[in-house]
Length: 357
Image 1 (cartoon, rainbow, N blue to C red):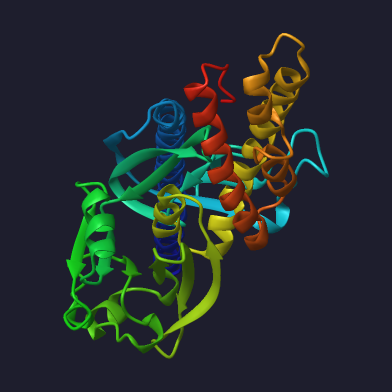
Image 2: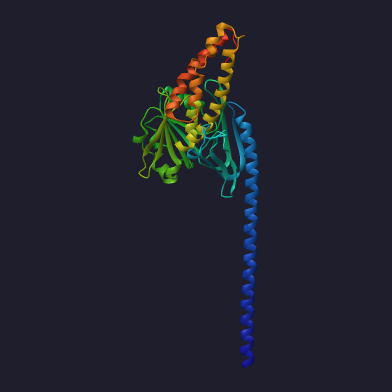
């Protein structure tokens, strides 16, 4: 009887040992799989980062170019914080806290001066890029716009402005033109990010469809209103009460900025990248101002040309002074002076003088 009891204890102990050993082995393989998966995701993220850096750099050098790019299925996050931006009054090399990152891998690429307009989050296996030059009135830089196949753009309006903006918008995006009475019936169509672009109607009285509300987070539903007569953009966010509320408004100089607002998820993101653009505008306009002053003071400059080089009259001084900080009143000042500068530059051409820009 004692022998039988001892054997039973040994059998029980053996089973306990087997279970413990099996558990340890199982945990080892689970950890191994997890580690390999993490390594694989990290390798993919590093590959995507390298490819995107090359693509984005190349895209910014090409004007009016559209590209659709296949990438491994992943999430891209874009950040640009206006409150972190510095300008030429604060630094010789102004910048903003700005980056794009790949999923939750921790892999990111800093973009302190690169001007990129994109949703805060993109998910999928394809991204679309588009570039437009920014001329004020001289060439300053290219704006790079980025989006994905999971973003739906709904242009709401029936005016010529609505049609023009819709027609110029990249063909391969999920873009739709709707009249104000049909837009509230818009379906999700499998998308999770929605941008409404208004022209003729008030976003605060607009009703978003229940289907879109049920599928998207409020942060992924936003709107802008573009008033082409006053050249003003109004930014709206979507509330928990399922209505659009005005966040802020700003004037714009060119259509490139209006498209930038369409691609941006928030006013903060838009302002951040426009501050980068203003930093570049300030740098280039300062160089042009020096050149214009030099031509004005050069004794060999023909008298017929001198008037066009007067920086106090040709608009350059005002552009330099108002391009330090991205601010609405500065935009209005630059807008008027840009027209003056354009006329002065045309005059130099007609008088066979050296061009201002």
